[in-house]
Image 1: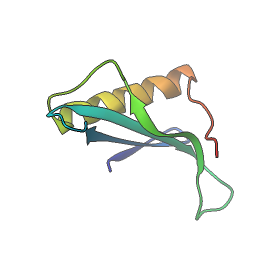
Image 2: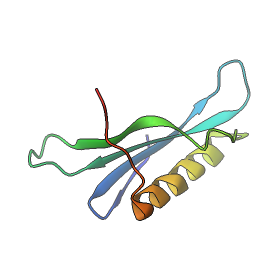
Image 3: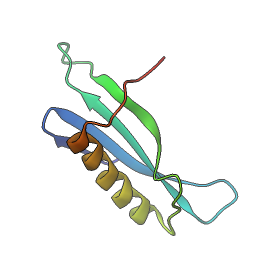
Length: 83
């Protein structure tokens, strides 16, 4: 799973092929630093983003996921993990 660090956040972005389809979905998870170096705090659990859009290949979906994650961090619109 590709990842990037933006300020104090670590984002994981990926793609998933939709069931019974040739199309792909964009997936994002966002984490922040923790006081424990072996742990990171999940602030946005891995889930599909841009749900109204399907992509023709994994690369397009991952590019969209990366773009959405950056926008979420810039706008402060990420949500905490539940569970």
